[in-house]
Amino acid sequence: MIARNDSIMRRGNPTGADANDVAAQQAEAKSGAPARVSGGQKAQVKERVSIRLDADLVAALRASGPGWQTRVNNMLRRQVLQTD
Image (cartoon, rainbow, N blue to C red; front, side):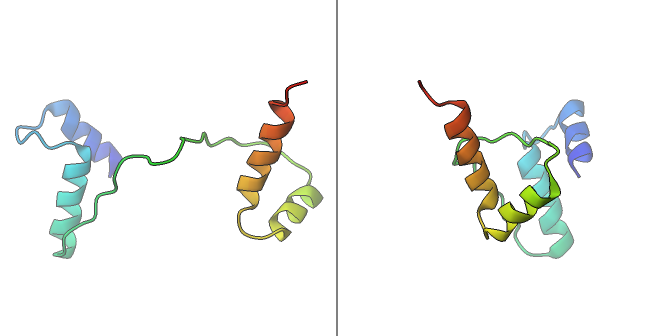
């Protein structure tokens, strides 16, 4: 879907619709129901990364329940950005 929307934007769009508008129109046409279009990013943008961690560490973090990734982010932030 993204590639198609990008190609529409590159060709030029005589209606002036942006990629979100085009995606919403396509979804609405397929389902017959109005499509929901998400708004802008409300929170600070986070970057997806991939790192290798010990399996027991990941298991313990996941066992701590929902929100474990946010807690890891907060722990790293405190450790890396600590002021001495």
